Structures are given as structure tokens and as C-alpha cells.
Image (cartoon, rainbow, N blue to C red; front, side, top):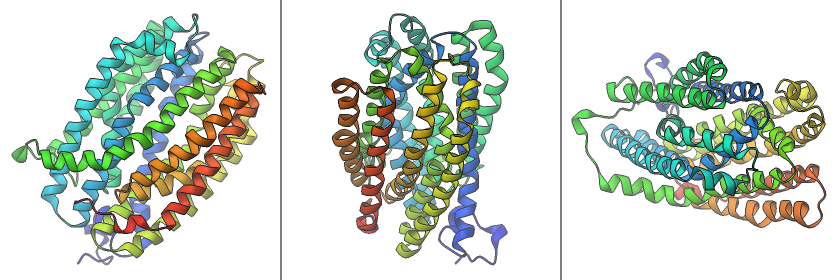
Length: 453
């Protein structure tokens, strides 16, 4: 048995099942937290430079990104499912199958991203029209979308592989991949934007992710991580792939439901004019700061649950999730307070029209409440995903988003025409229900007996 008396010899995955609980959580958490912060920086940086291109650039990028996020729900599902399967083998100390599961997941992700990229590239214009692009924004949105989808494999393998390895207890790989992405984009985007405008902005994003992807795959191939793609055992294992797909299938719906809801929401927001849409796009970039604790600690809760279930330590997994939730919620609340106070100054940094800034301030302050609730949802969602229970979160998402949030938003926008401010409160109501249902389902403890065989 590996004990806490030999910390220099233990990996984060080994600490997850042995020794001090807080120390185990911290060893998994800090690389993921740093990765999430770095993952947020390019988005804000991109929004800053898009604001200097001219009218419509923010909206064009937001519409293209919204369609992309909706389409890549399958990648999100494969990332979580791959992580859950790999984590079980890591917890059971079955290194060969853990490596094989890693390879199988990467193959599935690459094929899926390639197919979706081709669809997005070919049908860019009708997809942008469907998303709500008006005639002034449409040409920019189509140009942005085609470059984005041409590089979709790189764009998706970085977060997908990184998310899988976070759950599997190897968060350092995601951290270093993100460092490469961030550094490359910080250097490239000012040069490319000034030379090529909006085409340069999206090319910088795609190019930076290509650098991160190449580095991450190199680490897995070389064996410099605790998990690896073993060239000596390079094969397509249909049984392993089916195990991952079976776990991923409910997750496609779970991930797809909010992604599609967000696309429909953007279409409704676009109806209030490109100024309000610009404010929405900028605010979603700013609010990425409040996503950091929830998204990062979601990976930690998934790792602690998946690895400890593999090791037969259910009670330790349960205690870890409770502790992780308290920490994540406290950090999110602090960040929300900072954003609420500094909202007017923040929005002025992105070249929004003067009459749009007050709308954006109200939006940002209201959504801070919702993002705090989402932190609780993400932590418990990650815990259940780590156990391989993707069906329960899927049902929670369907109920809260499609039976409550979206109908409420549609009624406000189309029936009563109460204005955009009412939309933000409708979103908060939906997120409140979602958090309550997710916590209740986790406490029902069905995840504790989930089998991935």
C-alpha cells in the first residue's frame, strides 16, 4: 500500500485513495484550477481584440462559437466517458487497460471532431443563418465559422483529452497543453488581427490550439505522463470503445441539451439587436472567471469519485465531494462579488457602444447569481460523471433547461416582450432548479453502485 509517509513517491491518483483527504484534493485541484484560469484568458484576450476589429465582430464570433459548442456535445460526452473508464482502471491499478482506454478515447475523439468539422465547414452559411445572424453580421460569421471548423480537431482535442485526463488523475497534461495554447495565442493574435482582421483572430485561436494538441499527443506517445498511448500495443479495441460509447451516450444528450439551449437563447437575444448580442458575448467571456471554480472542481470531484470507486472506497469519495463543493462555492461567491462591483469598468474595456454598457452591467450582475448556482451543479455533475452515471445528470438537464428555463425565456421574449433584463432572471430560475435537482440526485447515492463493466 502507498501511504502518505512517502509523498515524494506518490502520484495524484495514488493520493486520491490514500492519506490526507485535503492534500489529495489539492494535488488534483491546483493543476486543474490553473488550467481553467489559463483556458479563460484566451477567451477574454480574443474578445478584447475582436472589439478592436469593428462592429459585428463580437457577434459574429459569438454566433460561430455557439454553433460549434452545440455541435461538439459528442466530444464533451466522450471526454467525460473516457475519463470515467480510465479512472476506474487507474483506481484498480490496471495500467495496461488504463492506457488502452486512453488510446480508444483519443481515436473516438479524433474521428468525431473530423466529421463534425467537415459538416460545419460545408454548411457554415445556413448554420449561421439558423443561429440568427442578421445580414450585416452574416458575412463575418461565415468567414469566422469556416476557419473555426477547418481546425476543429485541434480545437477539440485539447479540452477533450485534457478533461479526460483530469478525471483520470493526470491533470498536469491539461495544464501544460493549456500553457502552450495561451502563450501561442497571446503572441500571435495581435499580429494576425492587425494583418488579417477577423480571419486573423480565428486563425490565432485555431493555431494556438494546434500547438497545444501536438504537445499533448507527444506527451502521451512518449510516456512522460502517468498515462500513455502505448505504441507497442497500438490497436483498435472495439470492446473498449463500446464501453466508452455506452457511458457517453446519455452524456451526449446531457451536454447537448444546454449547448442547444444556449444556441436558441442566442437567437432570442439576437432579436434585441446586435448591441445586446455583443454585450451577451462579452459577458459570457467575462463570466468565464466564475466558471473556473466549478469547472475545475468538477474535474477533481470526478477524479476522486472515479478513482475511489475503483479502489472500493465509497465513503471517501462522498466526503471528498462535500468538501470540494464548499470550496468551489466559496471561491465563486468571492469572484461574483468582484465582478458585480467592477461591472461598469470591465465592460468599458471591450469597446461596447455607450448605450449598450448599462444593459451589459445589468446582465452581468444578474448572471453572477446564476453562475454561483452553476458551480454547485458542476461539482455534483462531475462527481456523477466520474462514477459513470451520465443518465441522471442528463435527466436533470432536460427537466431544468427544456421544461423550465427555455419555456420561461420564450414566454418573456415572445409573449410578454418584457425586454432583455427579464431574460437574465429566467436563466437564474432555471439554474436554481438544476442545482437543486443535481444535489438531490447525488444524495440519493445511486452512483455508488454504478458498474462500468
